[in-house]
Length: 269
Image (cartoon, rainbow, N blue to C red; front, side):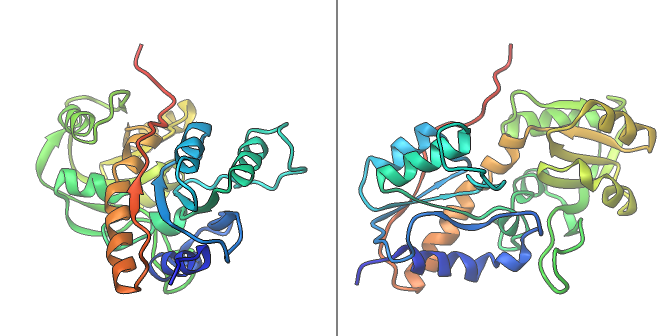
């Protein structure tokens, strides 16, 4: 029996329910037909032109991205916007595109986008950081304790080399001792109140804005900006592994492979 896009979407939804996604999010199928055949599943962090070319290199590829291609509604499906141009490219190439976004962020099977930091730092007594999107659902972010106190500078070095995160930044006294660590993969400064309520010494996240960093420091919270890409991309291998295991149990035959395209936009000067 040939795999279909719909069967793969059902598999993803079973492990990462869309009810766990934030209200503003757009997970699920974004380009394609649920009845389309699937001969390969390509897991990627982002949908870019290079990733679409990689997907189109093999017929009947389902591109399963973490970041939705169509997060905001388009006024028209034309090349006038980046998302419109990419969606047209996908459709013309016969590539189905789907996303598992904040529903994957909230995963509790080790594939969540806060889990790479939790594992790297060997945090203990780990609990959810943020409230779930729906009552009884799974929640984004993690908070836990380091095995021993370290300085903020030492913590930052561990993250910079271990994720890795070559463009990592930290704000706070380098010699400040930290023990309790809050983590929110992606863009997570909205979790500052949650981190403070959880008694965290530091929040590890990405996309930290100037004034948000100053506000966090004023409230007594150090911040490590590991970069949106570094933390979340580190979760993609586990996500792909979980999909392979679930597919085998569901008798889906399409192989799951990771994209080899690097989508980090930043480079160190």
